[in-house]
Length: 550
Image (tube, rainbow, N blue to C red; front, side):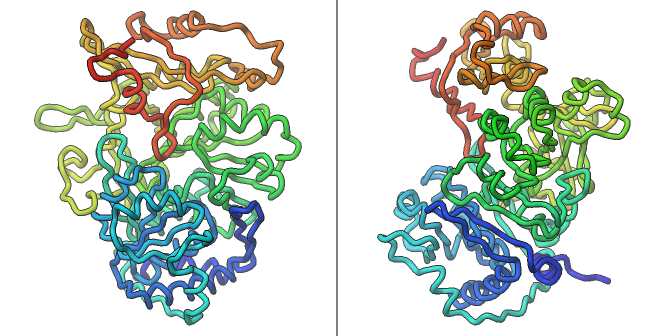
């Protein structure tokens, strides 16, 4: 049957088949809000009527300025299911960037989490008069109340999505390679993405799971988890606007699957290890955003017994593209080799095609999957963008035959496992030679005292560029021991220094690759999606007149 693939169909399935499953949210006061899928469904219908009564029509963009809450989840369904376009605003972007985004998107209505009222004020002053609806109201808030809207709305609504190719969502890239660019998702693309990530060899969610999405709902639709969870019937625990103890959240709610960037798991590990008996329900963590070092993967799998699902993707891909899980033929490999495989970005999920391409002057040449040849990763899939919002495809971002140019440089082996080498624009060019910042970072993260590492290229009169390493050391009592997980015994901490880090890199790389300087900091600047912000890092060391150059 030629039946449209829509979010309304997904919502109906969740209501009819999994109506008794639960959504819990940590409220700003620390208390837990809990209700069922059935209750959510009824509120979504009222919300659909309320948004319609505010004058929102098919194709209108409706923004959200919120974290992971049950109200935001309701908006994830109500806005697309009336034919409008959900536009989650990344609250970590600057007010200037967000004002440009809101202007380009022509948002007609913005739903704001009261927990961010003060922060939202900076943006509001730059966007002029927009219709604002708030939930979790603060005392000073004077805008329309979310709960009042729902209370006054009719509780029945008939979904009428006539075309699966209608837009359902609009997300903007983080702008790490320039100004943020908008990406439209359709009902069809998100439906198919949901089916793909729920495959056993991808996220593998089931009705028996309790899922904790730590990845923000304003970041590429929270990796599609709000849709994947409800379609599978998994319970959800949403962390809300204020950080809470991750170990407590997992232990008290019997979390089975959690998703977040590597930094989250690196910082949480010591506490999780101390309470490993309390968090025994946790069976899998989904990791993306940046590469997770093999030593940290080993620590989670060996010491905690938690499977690490290492994934890669982009906002342009809705966002999931690959997932690194072991094949049956890998079971006889040594543990070290298994963890090295899992540290790769993995194989394309069903529906995604990858290719490696070498750029020539007039055309692209496809490169072999031999695990050694480096090329630009290009992708296509039913849920990958074919252009950016309000712009025509350009050769900078899309090939003549319609593939997305990711800008990532990688190898792909004969089994289809991709390993990112670097960003094409992030390679360090020193004396005419290329140095991979990612390779250096990966090697540094193997050291017992290194918690985080970022390598950047800084201007150099003689060589053009030279690498500089910025390092965060593990706190005393929480050192990562290569091949031995994390040690919690201060008396076993080796007195390692910059010399030891140089020695570690020298064992793997040529002399000219070794950074000229190591800088030890308490925190590495992050982008709005949790990646190392290399432009900000560069700004720390390169100022007017280059007076801050190492």
